[in-house]
Length: 375
Image (cartoon, rainbow, N blue to C red; front, side, top):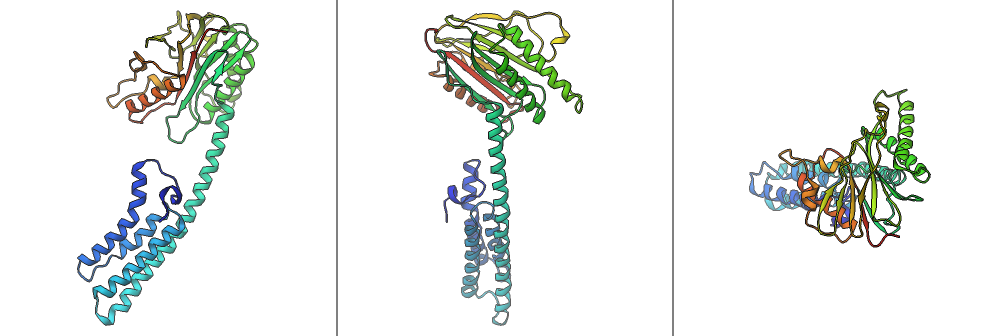
């Protein structure tokens, strides 16, 4: 039998599935033999022999399904010869019926495998398109920019979903390194469209706008234009929470403008984790017209060795089995991480343990470490 890594048509989602795929078809054949030997002669193991190739069809290669069908046929013949389970005049009729049933199941299993294989290929094609769309809509930021080390991570709430309504980006500009992490309203294709609008506006405006408030204005105008176009077919409000950060060159500081988003965390070299609460909260992008007040950025120290952690509410609103929210500070306090990538790996693993793998919202993470003296 071909190993599961080669013969498994649909892949495996865990150790339990791999064990099941390897053992179930031969187990069915074994159960059929034992059943026929241990029961009265009126009963046969044919149902087990027919089930074996049908179970193998979606799990293994086509020849494996045919192999288990042949094994079932051979077992039925041998059991008929050595068991003497029917009278001589009825033996041929009983055996022919059993063999016809197993052959029919084997042919059906081969056909089922072909259907499953085509579906698997279609899924692989769709996943390839989705991965290309993810790279286009949400490209991975560079790992190093101007004395900073960066890492980004996207954890989708739904299995096999690659991108949704969360976003992040990092860009070297004349004003320093500028960052954005955001969460748009809604889900599905509409949310992805809004993500593309915001990131496109960020990449265009971050190089030219002299301040974070004017950059936020550009993003808001782009979001409003997109919302106006969408209202022709969809009356839902178009808005997004976000954090804009700016790390100026030659300075041990950073500026943050928070537009209704969860507070970033500043991690120091001693294991401290400080939430960066804004002096005043601003409305999310797309809702700024509801206020005439312009909110300015807050400035924070950002010495060498410290790390800025930006995230979406998929981190802080993850719940455990008792309904309690996840607290990232509790996990991070007192710990040191050798790189921003290790930090994000640790956070993602902790959230997975806390929620037992069940989350309702996507989670985007962006970590930036000042690795040495500023340029």
